[in-house]
Length: 177
Image 1 (cartoon, rainbow, N blue to C red):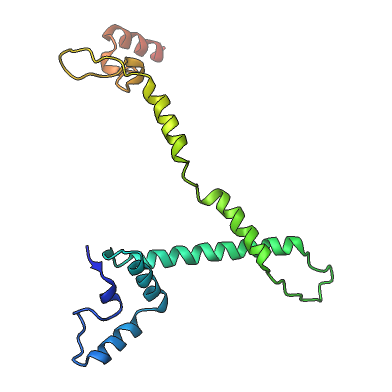
Image 2: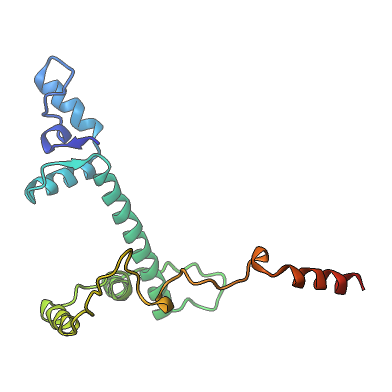
């Protein structure tokens, strides 16, 4: 598991291979994409020092997919708000305005990101759950299992080997008749 520090991401770490310090920093930063460098700087400003190398790529992938889906939704909202002319020869460009984008973000936020419940609600639910005491543990030998209706150990089918032998002979006679 490798980790990247902001100095290594910017090319100023001790892993530079060129002997010229200015050239090595320039070649290292030219290899790293601008968005990745921005993410490394954001991590540094937030105090995140150690992270795996694939974390910026995952964040960029998420940002790309989210932005793409929001813009597609905004185009759909824009087309719905301003329907095209019925004339097939006109090629009117549908422009997306900020209201369409805001509507697309608001619609996606309602179902994609779940807000955390307030602390007071969680404390209230925990107090309600903890008010009911657990049943006492009955000391007995062996493994303590819940009641049989809650266990998956109950037998719900008959094995052929457990059937009496007389029944098998009767079934064979009935089949042959």
